[in-house]
Image (cartoon, rainbow, N blue to C red; front, top):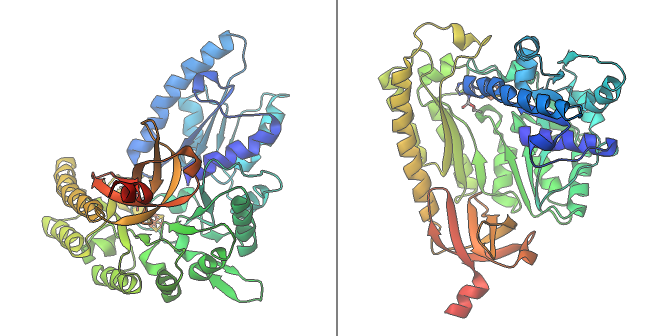
Length: 440
Ligand code: 5AD
Ligand code: SF4
């Protein structure tokens, strides 16, 4: 979502004469878009601000007027602290206020107004980011579209409900319009974004209420859109309508990111996840029944307070049962203001390290197995950009794996059949089917 938000900030500023540059050294306006989900990410902001301070001083000494803006969730949570720890920062914007950037820049050229803006009106933001005001600039055939923001789930480890606010859905009309405009600019794949994307719902044209499955089916009707994805989902919001869409809407790609965090019911309860390990397994089984080849991905946290060795073994057991195609796993990070931070029996860092290493070894082996299972198959690849080597393009399989193949640049934006020849844990490589036939 931060990638999308950063693109939208650039879209907002473009009509005011700004354009993106490759290196911060060359920028008159530097926006640091930040993440607060774990301590490491938040701490990086301050070290980066130290580096940017030097750039600002050098730029100003050369007669420029360099401004530094901090945006995103660290800005939301630590606005005042940023201003006092890093006085080189001119402005702090929470993720719900960045649509005010142009106004701030216009104002600050007249009076030096230093402020912290962390208001919470998401609907106003969605309105201000309407295409008429900030037309989207497309950078390739695959694009993100935010359809929902915020979270009402309050997992006890997580800052998102505090930094991004309550769940709000964009209207179906706005989303359909944005996707239509994207398709007219050559976009063929859209990824619908939301902190709880499958909690999305909205009034539909005939007065009924659409859920995410309905939205996907309607977006699939838009000419030029061939692939639809969404992320991130919550197990509690996986309704049958969405599962059915995986069975019969062929444009919905066979990939589901469904975080579980832990395989222990005791830990899941303490995390306030609202489901058990067995219920999660049932959902995965139902999804696999609808779409047998679906690639499953997940998020895991090790070392949540009071997680015992036996609890951790339950997580490994669940992972073995599911067989993930990919996954993200993290050590529990105490976030200020969340219930987890104050819980007794915090787990020692060394314990977290060894559990994470064991979990990641299993997940990495599963990912490698999944990638290797594609060798010998011919898959439709949407080519997105040129690769590192001459004559090579990079694209994605329906299962979201990266693929390298020799192909002409004119194929960027088209979906081509590629015969998969090789796999590493992180990518596949292959040859265009027509080339492989020529060789045969
Ligand atoms: N510590 C570690 N990981 C966290 N996540 C969210 N909050 C924390 C935390 N306090 C992870 C969860 C979530 C992903 C986006 O980040 O796994 O699904
Ligand atoms: Fe955070 Fe996701 Fe839980 Fe919401 S559902 S509190 S975003 S982990």
